[in-house]
Length: 104
Image 1 (tube, rainbow, N blue to C red):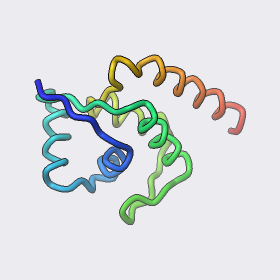
Image 2 (image 1 turned 120 degrees about the vertical axis):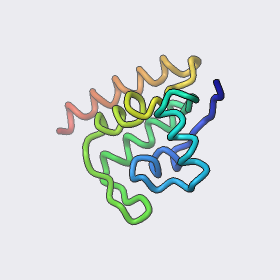
Image 3 (image 1 turned 120 degrees about the horizontal axis):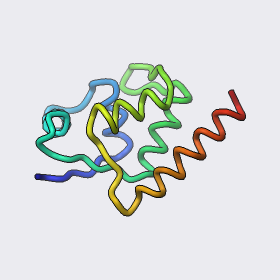
Image 4 (image 1 turned 135 degrees about the vertical axis):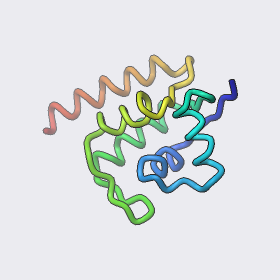
C-alpha cells in the first residue's frame, strides 16, 4: 500500500474540499482504504490551531471545532501520524484539550 505525507496546507485544503485534482485523487484513495496519508504532528497541530481561529482557506472560512477537524482527518479521512510521532500527537491533543478547557 502506498504511503504519502501531507503538510498543513494540503490538510486544510482537504477540509474545505479545495485540493488540486492529483492530490484529491490521493486523498480519495486514502478514504477508500487503498493508500495511507501520514501527517507530522506539527501539521496536525497547525490544522487544529487554524480551525480554532476560524481561518480562511481558499475563500472558505473554517468552522467547527478542532475535534471536528481531527475526526475529519484521522477517522474519516484515514490520515495518520507516522509511528514515530504518535506520542507527540497524543501530547498535542492533551495540550490542546487542556488549553481549550482553560480558555473556553
